Length: 268
Image 1 (cartoon, rainbow, N blue to C red):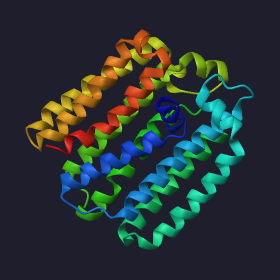
Image 2: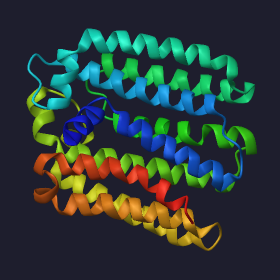
Image 3: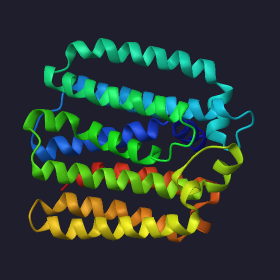
Image 4: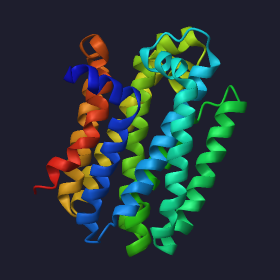
């Protein structure tokens, strides 16, 4: 029963939303700023709408999706559109309770997100999808703390590191899904590069990230660098053990589960 519930939560991207909320709670503690309830609502609704819209676009492109997630979105397409409309209304009402600076910065990010979705939908060969998603995801989580404390070199580096981890997550997933994406006619960076080049890119990103973690651990608070290193290490493990993690989509459960780790680090 629990497995069934969690399966649907994953298909509906609720796990992604929860991971983002945990991360924002952690960043609030890290930057020592108070994050209001409306801010969490804004982040949750924005991320859910972006991920759900992306899945609906993909499901709409194929008549017979090979993955259960996309089959679910295709089967319940109209219902999810309705739910998305309700979430959008909630997000608009929630704007009245947000700080002005967060609204301004959020409007810019929203415009970028909408432009991304339109590009993905109309430009079929767009290969930077994963890069754009990673940037929007990281910026969205850092939006509230940065709106309060301002953007400095340290916060910019941390945001770039999280964007790198998010991109690594999407790249590893893209490589694990390479056969189903090819079958469904979806576009992805792994399909564009091929499995071998994707492996080289994954290794390069991991080395670059770990170099930054080691370098900035001496300059800034070390705990967040340890958190980022653990997240990166788990993603790299998934990539080098594809046979194990491909069973029952373990890679997706563990790979998205790394974004729950900030909840554990809140104890430190």
